Image 1 (cartoon, rainbow, N blue to C red):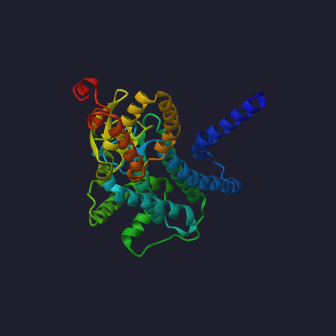
Image 2: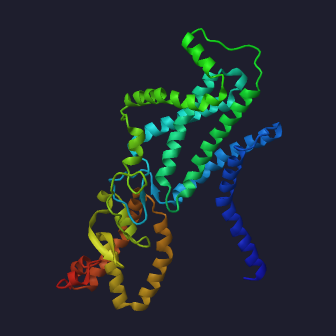
Length: 379
């Protein structure tokens, strides 16, 4: 590779890193700076709208990508057995209805504040919109605390930016209300609502008033969710009934190891009724789940190495070259089941060779992935 190609490759690498990590950081810095910007010109407002839409679009895509790369299994509660570097879900799966309702209520509140002109909203409506948004803020804060560890900081950027966008919008509404000259004072027929409306004429009280209003709103949401089978404390249980995370109150089973380069992936990753695991074994000093197909394949390779070492090296090279990419595609039990079924004809061929070349074929198969001391007496 000449100098120009090296420079070009480095530039592409820098561009990739900037797109993946630089852009989210710059968007966060921009939103933080908006909290301190006093001038709110039409041109700046248009630019802020573009950046806001850009944030929601990129935030959804980037968060999905970061989640995939993080080895988090969002369908695995703390009770499930995981493998290698997999992590249990940071939100208990049975609480997802509660979490989604709080997020949707938060989005609804933000849309009210963002899309309805302030001239058309009494202060009480504004406070209600802010209060609804607090539902999304609650979930965002708990999510950030939950996963704030190791290399998962990137998964907090989108919720942090969502909270910043709400703060910016509330700040701008307060500023607009101070500068807004109303020709007539809005009144309500209900004396209680009218009294509340008068108290809220001071825009600086809106965030605190919204927090007070959030308490009964929280009670209403919990009561409605209880009708659909959710527990009253589901918001808290969502983060505490987990393992591996900052707010987790449970201890999950220790992850098992399986060799991602070989059929160990199939034996450990498939449905038990299909791949039929039979016992635990050891490979390269790590515990692995073993099924008969894996033992037969390894016994065949062992015989091939003993009888035809040159042929074995060629087969081993082909297996290493193509076995690893295939294993990388096995991300679900269904995929492991498919590979297991496709390997069945080869398994039968391996078994035929073993029975024709070994005096004790079943003993040969049985000792695979056993410690040396457990192999004595079987050969």
